[in-house]
Amino acid sequence: MVFSKENGVKNTTKWAVSSVFDLLSPPLCRGCGVRGSYLCECCKKYILEHLRVRRDFGEAPEAREVFYRVSYLGYRDELLGEMVEEYKYRSIRGLAGVLAEILWEGYLRSETRKRKVILVPFPTSRKHIRERGMDHTLILAREIAKRAGGGMEVSRMLRRRKDTTQVGASEELRKKQAKEATEVDEREVRRVLEKYGRALEKGKARVVVFDDVWTTGASMIEAGKKLRRAGVERLEGLTVVRGRRQKSPTIYGGLFEA
Ligand SMILES: [Zn+2]
Image 1: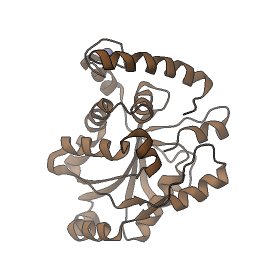
Image 2: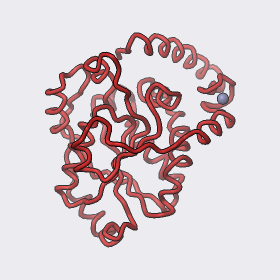
Image 3: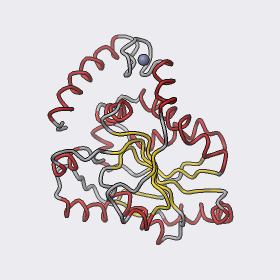
Image 4: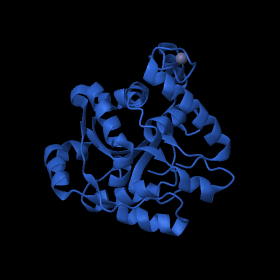
């Protein structure tokens, strides 16, 4: 794993220290450092009080043609983003519950009151699943669904097609890789459309493509296009956080994509 200089050094040290403590004793709160849990009640309350669901298509005008809206909760360089990266790159599974709780309390609970949510986790490459020992997006989606009871269903209508990885790839190569990365599980799409077809038409159900981070949006957009072609209309895109464009977008853009 490569880190950007400003963020990476700080995070690496912090993660190394916190990981050692996590093994020896109860974890430290990622917000204030108090021992006992990954996020203490106080910090969770603070995050939820200050959280607002953000919605924009970022720097990807194409997203507008695929998704009717794209939602996210924060930025990568905020506490939420740091937790996402620690969860993903250091495979701290305990953070899945924390992040799920924030997504649920901060956004999806109110959504499931309005409509059934069919959450489609963006598939992780086999290489990354092997390296991390987990499919982080799928685990997170299931953690959220646990909290939703009957209001939500996780559907794996997207599958990984090729073990392409975007790290360090040029803009053009990234686009090509994004196109080839996913495919639609036609059988699963049929099942969902048979079960929820009418509800989807009436807006009583919604398919939400879900990932941890939106950087350029290329992968999500390509996956969304494929779902649209397979007959799934009115898609929402949802990520926990968004990557902020920094001084060196080519380096930054290539560092963190799933
Ligand atoms: Zn705290």
